[in-house]
Amino acid sequence: MLKGRCLCGKVRYEIDGVLGPVVMCRCSICRRVTGSAFATNASVEAKAFRIVSGEKSIKSFESSKGQFRRFCRKCGSPLYGWSKSFPYVVRVRLGSLPDAGGARPVAHIWHGSKSEWFEITDKLNRYEQEPPTDLLMPGASAKSAKKKRKKK
Image 1 (tube, rainbow, N blue to C red):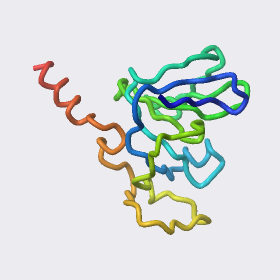
Image 2: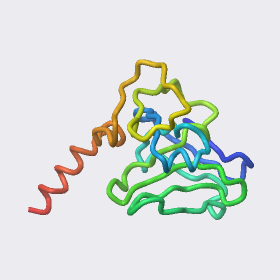
Image 3: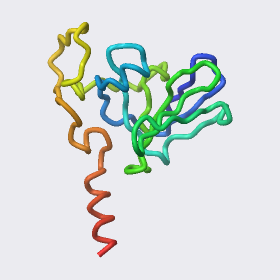
């Protein structure tokens, strides 16, 4: 089990399971929200993620249509995000986890809008914009196809 929290400790969460692919997002929104060159995120099944304390201290912000960021209203720590398009996935901010269970980054996303003042020196995959959906939300393609079949 992985345990995370905000800076002040008011909000605490647990993850029963392993993290999905770890990506470093270099889009302008993630840069603004972190005040840094990128945000490091990993997907987790929503059913494996739970808030264990401080739920009333969580504030939500819709950063783009259908994309929500959750953070501690007391200290401002970014904690996780979710999308209306993929409600079964939570995108955890790795900085809120003291131990990521051995997970390591696999890619840089939105490389095309990266800051000019940070040089990438690793050999990880780079995606100019949005990467394949399954990189961010494993199994999303299969779940989307299943939903389409049910509608017919």
